Length: 380
Image (tube, rainbow, N blue to C red):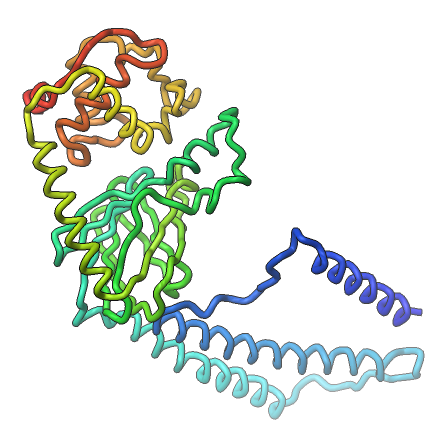
């Protein structure tokens, strides 16, 4: 009776699995880890598979002995329990065998851990800083520095009542406005740290993740062997915007990487020159530029509508700051307060002037104030 019920149960499970496998909603049934595209990821995968097989074999043997013993020594068969209290031989066996198994697993695991720490002789060094809630990248050798934010279509789709269907957004919450571009077959040292709270930089294809801790620098390395786009996320609960910190690594051949470096440095130089300029901009120019900065930097907390998150982040629409003395508004953006970070070290004078002008002349705010870069420079 028992075995008949067990057989029927297993048959039902197999039928259910077959039904879902045939459906369009279950397109990918991969249950294992991915092998990745770096030497470390290959080592981790091989170590994982080795230990998986070891514990699987142990499980089969142990449960096999248990089921065999229960079946062949059941009461209905007239089995009589043996009477014994101690066996030195058995105790030695069940102590030595687990020790040997653990040592056999510890040796390759230790080799992999040692390999992870060999960060020297890198061709490229990239410093990664986690912010609330975006990533900042600095290529130490190339002199390139930029921030990477959640892509605009994902930002729009995540807002409740926006009318944008997340299911129609490609790579929803997994796309950014600026990719981390890296060359293949080069040793890359990746330094991770945090600005305000603990984050964790994690791209599964690289085979590891590292905490980004304020005041501390962790390091690791990667040699990406295959060109492609590899996605990841912040893997440490860092606050309300934790789910909006994706990572996109774009691995390209060396010639394309060098071309990207040249183009990025040129654009960065031009942007820095524009940011340092004290040239006055028109109100329309400031508001247009400020809107883009607001969407990428401020909207995650204060929302695109300026309504904020009640009880957590204050509204800017109709707020005392956005409609009060201009000096107070500039000071708040420069120096921050409570959960709001200080943007004085993140944004240029021109960027801060633009976003403040936008905030003071958007939604229900109509102060008519126009802030120029020189006003922010004076406030610093």
